[in-house]
Image 1 (cartoon, rainbow, N blue to C red):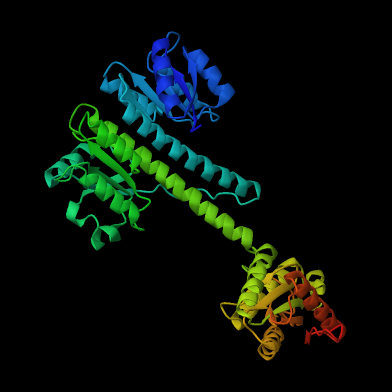
Image 2: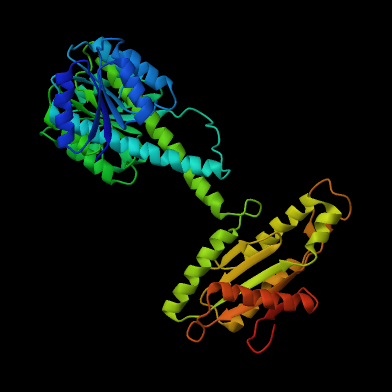
Length: 470
């Protein structure tokens, strides 16, 4: 099934007709004849979308809508209001209360199904982003507060400049956080428009020729800078074929083409503001998810990669080495007598040492090299396409970089202000033409060499050899 839809109408015949149409499109349907029954079914079955008649026997459809939107458990369910009476004031009231749209009976089947597809796609995106965000929040990556309200830039592209200027005048007093500018259709894809980075476009469906506005929308969606912009298509009343096509091509919403009619400008501004708010929310969620992914792979103190990331990258490095036949090296690095730093000077001093060591290590390595903090004072280094001599030279260089200069302690520490730190390094080499050891075995070899370095007096590099322990 494509989705579960609740049909709410007090007339059984209307419910049956809708059920037949929706079942033919592979939607699962439920039916309610009153507001109370609708609220009960929503609470019990959590449908994906609700078709809600404005007039019901026990309460108005608007009252049902307000109750649904007031409950966090049901607020995210899209609701399409349906009425047999064309009242612009009621239409605007429904949209303000949270309805996704307000459709007139008899319902145009093509437009209804296109609107359902559009809303269900949007709901699926919302649910996916929200689920990922909750997962990251459960892992401890809480979303930061929004610092300021985003002010949006809206491009108005009418069939003529006069039409676009008329839209601008009508919208001026009703837009919330957006400012609208008139853009010529021939400039919409130019470098100047791209540089502006418009958050939204309002485009007439017919720019000179029928369907030109829809073609422009497709072009904008294909460009990287405008791919995520809100695009609303302005249509004359009754253009159901163009409306359905616009929704299926990705229009965020449909706006009245004549915005000077009563309540039309308010409706257009409300739809634009709502689509922009959704866009900015999605951007915040995506940014949060990106930050969460980065944090999931990064040691928060040093900024280096963590063990989880290092192990996956090392496995890829080994696989690539096997395919190319080129050798690589793995180092296990451990700071000498680090526990005494924390015990003597405190954890702030220990943190300062780790941060400085991470910086010194990073400065000595190539961009292609892997550097990770895998434990308290333990680091892992992997050098792709590196032979024995180059690997040992690199390890010696790292050892020297750590020990050659004292590390400054944070402000407020007692004397001494700087302490000398050294490191022991174990080096394991892999020639994939002669050695098919898994990465875990290579790390174990580097660890054995590290133990040899510690036993041999610390502050030195030992190389693992098959004919000796280290």
